[in-house]
Amino acid sequence: MKDTELTQRKNDHLDIVLNPALARKTIRTGFERWRFEHCALPELDLDSIDLRTVLFGRTLQAPLLISSMTGGASRATNINRYLAQAAQTLGLAMGVGSQRVALESEANWGLTSELRQIAPDIPLLANLGAAQLLGKHGVDYARQAVDMIEANALIVHINPLQEALQTGGDRDWRGILLAIEQVSNALAVPVVVKEVGAGLSASVGRQLAGAGVAMLDVAGAGGTSWAAVEGERASTPQKRAVAMAFADWGIPTAQALCDLRKTLPHMPLIASGGINDGIDAAKALCLGAQLVGQAAASLNSANTSAEAVIEHFQILIEQLRVACFCTGSADLVALKHATLLRIENDA
Image (cartoon, rainbow, N blue to C red; front, side, top):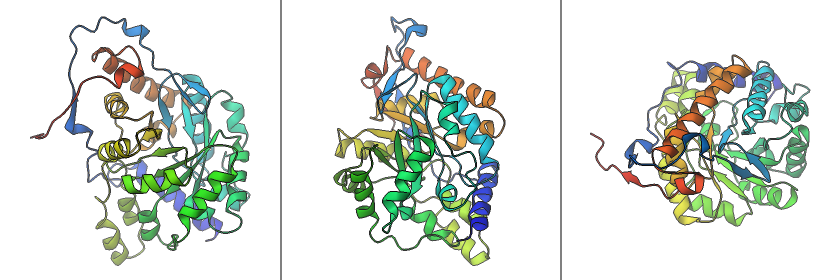
């Protein structure tokens, strides 16, 4: 695919996700079916609640990942700078968007060592699509992506549904698991595998764990529907009809998280996909996530300024802190033992 076509695709994705009338959600995350038991006597100092955790040897001030959002569009340069500034200020992790365009052309759109200069202290995660790992140059691509931004880890995103629906998408997925295993074995940094909104099943999680992947991002259904996004940018009514049939496809985030935690009790998990606020984040952490990722919900602020991104995540962090306070949880370890009740009937 030509560079200009890839760049236009990324611009289309940004336009659609930024337009709430287009980036519709037709499936819920499943977190609405869980409710914390309120603790009326927390015996805690709210301001002393400890939200710190460690990711890839670096301390985070809160268990949050500013998740992979954009790559390959000119306006992504400022977006990436704003996100990096916010992550550094707040002590959060950051994952960049796909680096494919940056690797295959001279247009890096801010995906350079400048990000590390802006955010020297945080875990910074590089990002490539699984299809880019196929072939003899896959490991070299992965190393270049990591070196380009001096990353602490590489995210490999797997998105078969989106690729199947988009014009020019990667349709041959034979050999992907082996390619991920080869990259996991070859890189000096950990490999994280994430879906892009349709969720990781327990069976796929087992395969990835066996391939040496260090961390999984469940990236479940309930956030942005990339099938619907591709439907919006379809070139014909027929292609739109095919894509829109899958607008509610996928494993809801809470279900994917619970299934993976049960199947892989020791695998570090990131919960992303429709995390709306700090209460959702608290539920995800209680259900077994080590980290919570958010992307689309913060894109409007990321399109504005670093200050707007900081304010957005400050609100989410304060919501998480209050959720800990009202469950009697002094820290993230205690939060995992908070009482979280399944609501079978949400009518």
